[in-house]
Length: 124
Image 1: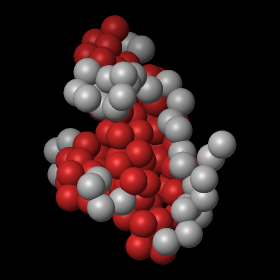
Image 2: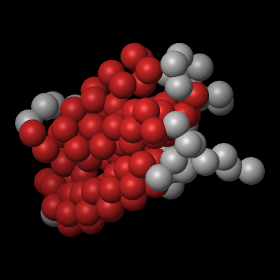
Image 3: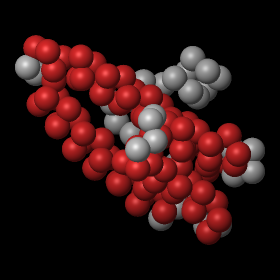
């Protein structure tokens, strides 16, 4: 059963883990991973919600960074541009949904994500 977070600070930090993925748009290379990683490392021991959502965000951002790199390589075959557009739109929508869900105090589980960091992931 999913619990709803009531503590406003915990909700805010949880939401920021999702929102900082958008730092990619201000020109920070791999800002979509670096921003959430900083919040995760600083606040994971203080807030369980941040720890949980931080893992979700990081797994999603790493997975989709790999997809972005593969799509960029596939530009040579002509399919990469379409993949970049489609995956870019999907990425943005999912980040916004995750941000809004976390701001309401609910956990968000990203679809289509490899579990790199977590209980069963590579970096336990």
